[in-house]
Amino acid sequence: MDWHTWHDLYDTPNSSLGRRLLVVQQHVRAALDAYPAGPIGVISVCAGQGRDLIEVLAGHPRAADVTARLVELDPRNVAVARRAAAAAKLDRVGVVEGDAALTRLYGGAAPADLVLMCGVFGNITDDDVLATVDHCAALCRRGGTLVWTRHRKAPDLVPRICDRLEASGFDRRFLSEPDAGYGVGVHHRTAEPRALAGDARMFTFVGYDALAASRAPAAPGSSA
Image (spheres, rainbow, N blue to C red):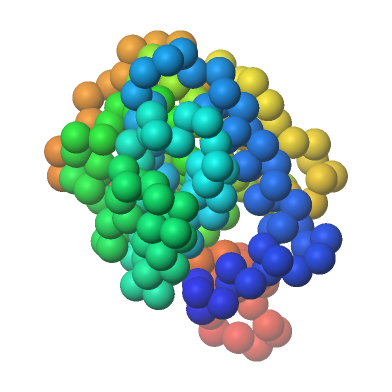
């Protein structure tokens, strides 16, 4: 998968990713609108080109209050995000080039008021999804908001994600309908944050295509 050109799908008319982006941005905007006066900390895991956040902050009345850390591995996407943040004069939006799975990259930024976990859960194994959900309890502060995405294709892991979040101190605020063509969830943290693991790996990014291929039944006569 070319994760740079993948972003072109956001601009494809009526694409599921384009519609998902609008829903994510809607909830990012609502979270920013709801925060009381004062600084707002944001973390974005596997931030890509930063469109979930940067396009909302551009022109938003709370933009000057936001300090954000976006972590992305692809250097081309990092460059796009940095240019977009600079063009919008978002001086406190930092884009880190690195493996977003590493907890040490969030030191000093976690726990945050707003955590974006978009484009992650559909690209890692089910076990890693649930493990990463547990790490969200350290990334998000009490009273903070977690916005996350996951496709609804069978086997649908979204109910288990919700159950795991809600068992670890999150309250569900929004979940897109199963037939929407995408999956977006919004959870509010009601418990105190857990301690952030200093040097742990939350997940291994596999990629949706590779995961789908690994789940496909073997062809007749195959030794796989």
